[in-house]
Length: 417
Image (cartoon, rainbow, N blue to C red; front, side, top):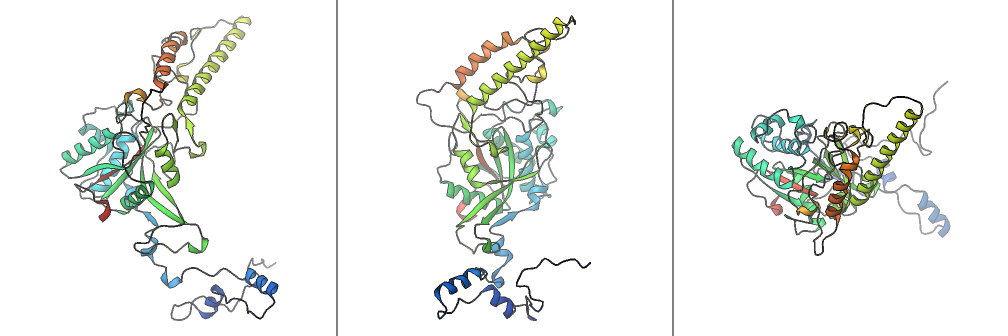
């Protein structure tokens, strides 16, 4: 039995798309640009005819060029090739910095030096192995990465500069609009001399490109003319992640990144889980406390049942829960938490909410088995959190999340990029 062809109701066997010269065939051109119905037709009939006609294209195929499309779709393979993935636990900062350094200065990117590994970078910065045991979170912040970049440039004999593409609050904030920040980000990602690191919630990663998606389907290949403003387009920022437990590439809307950078403590967005929307750090800490208490209650209930059954209970002391459930700060970890995205420091911010990062992926042997009981741990922990989350009068809004640029140039003129 011959298989049925799934074709449109107006399919024509004799239709040719392109003529001998490569130009659009007149028959196809007539279909793409239908003439309006005759004015002599009845009004209702004419409207029906027009409604049934195909939408005309908004751009001539002869005008579709790679140059125009490259202004709306940027994805350099060297940026992805230079991504240092997978990282050590909590080393997202130095891994992201290694990635952008290699793009700017090494032969696998746009430079001439041999590639720099994250181990070489750590040794040059004074760290000693084993690197997997280093808690980078408490000291790796925005200022730290910029200082490290300067040191690596000096030790490798190259020049460079760094700063913020967009930071809305706190030290180093950029007095520009979100529209200007969008323009600067796109310029940086289209440049051979610029690279970007995105500081998101408890993590760093590396934007590697973008796509400006037209809202009108007929403009899919329109692109942008030189100097044309991106109107009626949704910009998706393509991001490379050094963490080995997350997808290597994902995309975030520019509007989401802008919302993330515009939020203020205690509210925040998690760019690795944008579907969660706006979250609150105080609510998150309360949820951890409740989860910790639930675990304690379950353990006590199980212990009671064993004792009633006449089973000798050995092992953990009453009033404690297994160490795998506790973070170094006493919070409760998730059993499925395997993300090595790490924590990030707040070295650019006021000390009142410093150390904003969560430590949900690492346990501390001092807590749990052989360590202090929950009764001993909870009071100082509660006092610390209450003191930490109390708003202080007159404090300015702040957010450590930022887009940072790193350049192989000694100075950056955004107008000339």
